[in-house]
Length: 105
Image (cartoon, rainbow, N blue to C red; front, side, top):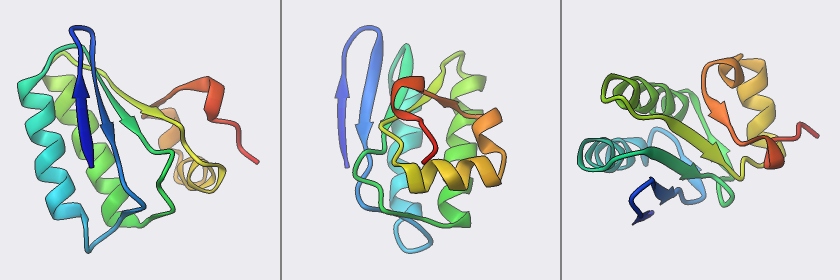
């Protein structure tokens, strides 16, 4: 996972998995990113291949933490498979997804 920042947003690149095995470390890094930055927190999910309920919980928790800090969590580069999971769980109604790459296949 990589974090890049600029005055208006931070971009965090998420790896191939966001599941029970990886979520503890990713959650900690995302919370640090929310607490230490300003503007939008953009999660680049373009490399994400697998997410489970624990990973979805990390996204929701990060969204809540960002909102409490007057920030916005934005999902970028959401693969079609992951977008389908967000749609089935209706998290696509809660989490902000960049429209250009959020097409459900």
